[in-house]
Image (cartoon, rainbow over all chains, first blue to last red; front, side):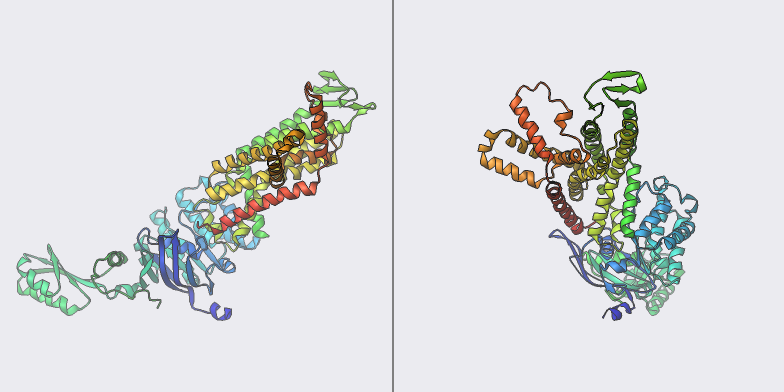
Length: 323
Length: 310
């Protein structure tokens, strides 16, 4: 049985994860998330959605009310497998009396990395994350960005199969953020799985293979970026001139207009062409026609709207799908 | 073991980062230096290498320095006062923040994400915190032992046993600090409650002694039985001094510390007899029952630590 679970393609296979604080505060209401081995997976959602709670359940810092599934082929909370996972919590604090090198040595030892290998890893990671010259400086002398980079080094010191990063670019300047993005891609290229929790949607868009959107403790969307965005296209037509005489006809075609901008929802180019024909027929000058794919932010806002009772504006990607 | 050692090493670094650690180190050196200024010779005490001399037969017997008197001085004044009271007090203050800092948000999550069971994490950190008192007790006792040996010319191998006794005394109180820290995550609460427990333990033992001292009190059978049961349950901090005195070869403190005017001769006699009786206390009984209390408190703390969401 164990051999079978070890061979699964899922690095993370969370099934029906619940967490209730006290008797009434529901943080997670049955989360199902699947992450493939060797991919960068992004978890996003508004504040209070339960993202950090979910990550902490994966890393055993929070005890779930109910949880099934596996991480790296073993049940959630399996102590042995934690040696193969790296974790950067949100706002990591290091003991202030440790130097950068001592901190990596300490956390490497806790992860059961043999001394020689953890020293090699620590030196390599400190250099890779631009902390080499401060390796013997106490952590309380580090800037916020340096602490964050040391946190990432800490998460990698055990050469993990999977790394779970909670807001990894928090406190980093634009150059540092780019460097972290490159590091994440390097990790993926090395075959490692990256589980990313970030509120910086543009960053997730740049590096993630797949994402899940968590709203009110439930997965509202899950899939590849392409899956989530391919059905959520609209055409944006910009025209010069007075559109008000055409407003009724445009609305019949399903388009909406505001100022000189006309939005044609859906991915059917024929409707967009019909709108263009209508505008041309009215001798209006068309400045531009461009297909617009929704960003993660658009999808997140939409998911939030649905969750809070607003009717869905448009069809989007598969919900709760693991594939 | 690797993880255990990592946590212990971390505790040593944390200890050395506290100013109190260095204050205590300085105090130990000062005390040893102060002791070095005294010398005991037959019939006299020499201060500051001959600057002053006091004639006294207090420490002399049969024409030579009486080692049991020196042992009594070493245990009841030097060790008990400086390490058993001042040292343990400072150590409790210094270590009260260890667990709250360890459990701070952003710090504890990483430790818990490592392949180590929670109960082992807590136990390693708990025992690691003893490194503080172990280091200080070792320094103090070894320094004073050397001075007593080289300068006072009395070698007391049993005096070295006060190192583990100091750690045990500290642990009786630190377990309360740890439990409160796990529950409240507050350094102040942990420190205050450990001192409160110390006063409580002392109070129970002292009250029980008073029942033994005044036979008329024993007519209150319920109270008498209750306080005796409580004495059995709680850590017996005062017994540590009796054990130290016995193992070092010192007499009871009443032999070293004069009992004043002795207004009530019978009471003083009974108190002396009671102290002599305490000197014969069974170490397995006193240490065993006290450590059992500590084990229960630590198990409670582990239970709470293991069931908390961080």
